[in-house]
Length: 107
Image (cartoon, rainbow, N blue to C red; front, top):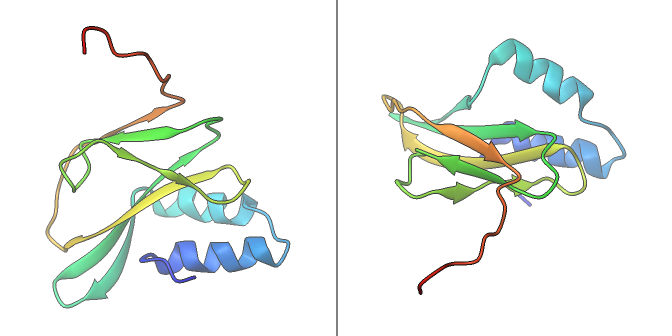
């Protein structure tokens, strides 16, 4: 499996080999989020990250213009979503962990 993010691809390999996530999160604490990785001329991969959610994480204000769900990396404490974007992209976003699935009313 190859993910758009080299960092997430590497972490996936480490997890499959029996590793943990502590070193990854220590690196994230130093680098900041979202992760920004080069992807080619004029492009980067933005990877939004969340830690510790139990059931889901929702991204509001992401590059797609939609409210995206982050994916959980196996059974780890890592939730992520990657996007290929122009390297001059700027945005404001919010992450919402454990968003309840509420029934729709009036539909």
